Image 1 (cartoon, helix red, strand yellow):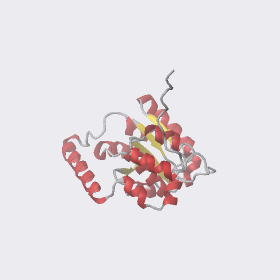
Image 2 (image 1 turned 60 degrees about the vertical axis):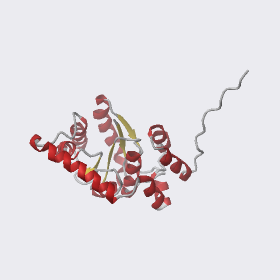
Image 3 (image 1 turned 45 degrees about the horizontal axis):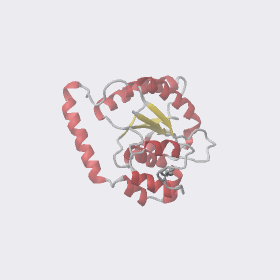
Image 4 (image 1 turned 90 degrees about the horizontal axis):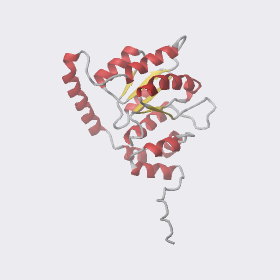
Length: 225
């Protein structure tokens, strides 16, 4: 599984701590972690919680990522912004119990965490425990187990409702403020990570044009001797 980490500007100084905890848990389980920043509070590319949502929508809908880990001071702003996007099902996760229940009941593809509120002594231990509950074992099994089928049915219904209530992601990208979108994809490693993993050529082309990047051309045929 490809896991994307997104950190907004007010909590950028904690990116290294969050990234270390996430990779320590996820990589031994066979997952890949892509850190989209922000990396420090001094980064030129600054992400607000609203941009977190846009970036999460881009990564998940293009299948450049299978899961997004994000957050902000309380976790609430990023959660709301992520859930405004099509195809993004984001839960507010504060502790390992939240993580376990979200994985088993909701089986979503994104979490938002509070990185200021309650983030104190031994916070990195809580992060590791949260990621352990999220990424270890099968998700969507249900809790309690006897309610697994109704939970699966409700997840399917919610997916259909969200599909009816939202536009497709490319339409979203074309409709939002273009300066806001450009800022959301301005991270120093965005191009390196995104284009190597995205499976949506239309979205790739639109973002390349927005970022002022040349379109990729096929390699030239070797000259015949």
